[in-house]
Image (cartoon, rainbow, N blue to C red; front, side):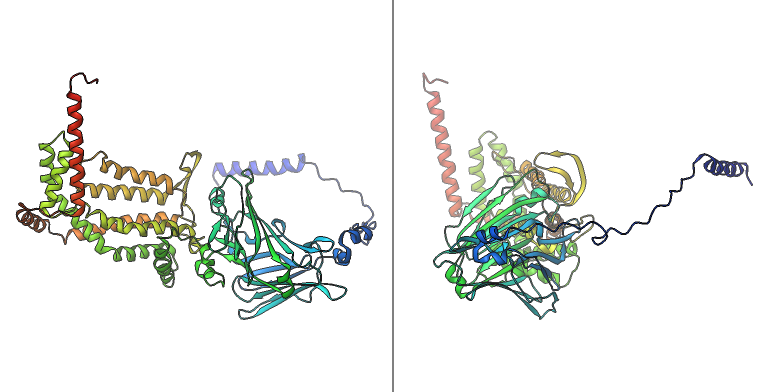
Length: 608
């Protein structure tokens, strides 16, 4: 045995002996009489919960006094999609859990939570308004788990003497997120008035970025068009609907809770969105109050709750006018592109790819393939400009200090060779609607939520590759790597284009602007979904590759030959387009104005 090993063993032995000698042994406690477990039967009697004085209850609720006291009992109905807990107190939904979704921190996702949701049903009676949610209803329903094609009917009834009653009925279906709701009253409500339905919901933080959450949450309501409360993350908002409301929704970024009217719309609807910037748990508190005519209650008013994901295909199947507008697909001129092209294409690809990063790459390839004719036309136009570059440079040398003269000579050259300086811009502009459509689509695609790819844990939010110990104005306190890659590829694409396109005279340095814009977008898109910035990055790379391939099929010598033939043909009578005529007149007018100004300045006595 080596010396070091012997020393080590001796030290360990000394430590064990020292521990036994120096550390005192615990003193055994003296035996005591054995105590009985602390249960109500073995301890002093617990005072019962004080009950309201019966006379006070009678004075407050009148004929409803018997229903004002009781014990709340829950009924739980569970499907593959949701778990709904009903309470006999008020006959309302107490909790709604979405079983297929989690919060950003992997906790159960409740859209209606007992401690953060409150319903009220103010029934107008001869004694005044009675809040039915303070009363106890009876039901024969029991807990159930439903099969996909099954359904459960839960009826809550509050019966009084003389066949007077209030009845609430819910129908939970075995699949989906729609819950049918009906309320009926007989002999209790004052005719001609309205029941006031109130709904207050403290919207919990379901996604990781609280600020972005506050920018997304709102109340949508539909009259003859979609209306919404302000999405300002720092201020409150309040609105009163000027017309009857067909439906309203409390909208999270990717989820909805809403109520849809049946044959008769809601009356006198008021809404509030309240925000406390200091509260890091509640995104916003939403409040809605809506009127239901008593006449509708007597016949049995019918409604539908939608409590589920704001998935375009799900909400578009809800039997309510334009309910799919809860998924924002962009401005009116962009919406058809998303609705009829990009969303169906995205869902088609979902049938083949379970990895959404690969799906986005395929989406880019398909879109780029469709736009290839426009890309080819744009490249040919740039090739024509490259062929004309020596002539354009000669014009600049001949008129170094006269910008108007340069532009006139350039227009003359374009007319002779049959080239429009805008012909390269038009194909590029034609592709812009798709890029803008994606800008609005990706932040609203719940399909990307909590889908990971490479280093991004969730493609529906930014990929935080690096967290900064400080916040940069207009940028944030994190670094999105996909946004950085998008910016680098955009600058690379701009550099490639600038090498292929001759400089154009003008007050704005277009080459510098082409480098500046990607940097500006880096600040704008740093907090946008990783799926969007990844799409733009792949799109830039594919576009560069696409142009390199097209370049092999474009013969610039042949283009030069065609332009030279056009120049000879149009040397005497160059053909002008309407735009070229307009531009030439504008340049001539500018030159005339410049000459007159110079003459005025040369007059004697003119002050400088």
